[in-house]
Length: 274
Image 1 (tube, rainbow, N blue to C red):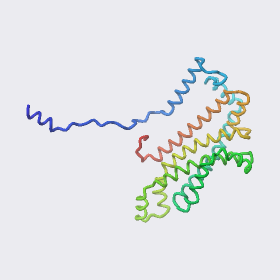
Image 2 (cartoon, one colour):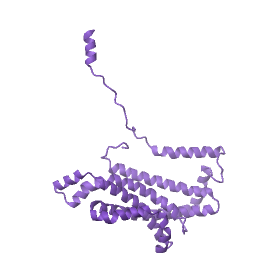
Image 3 (cartoon, rainbow, N blue to C red):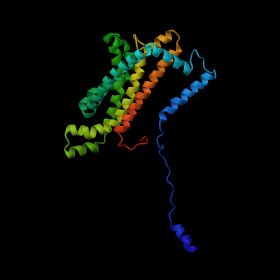
Image 4 (cartoon, rainbow, N blue to C red):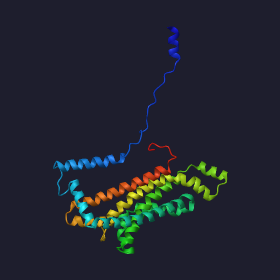
């Protein structure tokens, strides 16, 4: 008995490791929130808790959307909005990346660019609308230009911050290895800046839709924002909700696409979300 007790005392107790990670990713987890919101909306409408004139039922919005689609109004407005958003986003993406690289890889570039971009960030973008109308007129140019500004700022800020956060030991290692400037950018700078770039890209995608919904209500003759503005004048809340739903779907789909690309490109990282 004494020997058995001595063995038991000498044997270390194995503690069970506490699991701190969020766990396995659930399939289609990002759709749970919108589906729950839709269910609550439908239940409140069916119970008569919502004023149909202010907040129509989901099935009313679906019928209105189907009517606008068959009438040809909704497809035309969607294509117009997509063209504006894509043009502004492409310009803002290119400008944000190029400015971030110039400011992140050169002290001269940082002195010339970083302060100017932060000054631009401090000025409300919507406050530039009167000035841009005077410069570019009330056509498509000023809308695309303002969307580009909304997009390039978060892309620049996050990409530049990621570049500034690259460990200097990697730079020293590249110098010891005798890497060329191009090889340094390809092997050190780009992998180090990609996480911040994708954060800025997601913010830029969201910003393009937020800017679009406002700009299309200013001196526009087509687009989802114009459709919603006209519906406001006639008190058509169901048409307004159709436009909001379309904007929401486009925003969710585009953000999900960016997240998918991010997971594929940064598959080498081991993070809480992976």
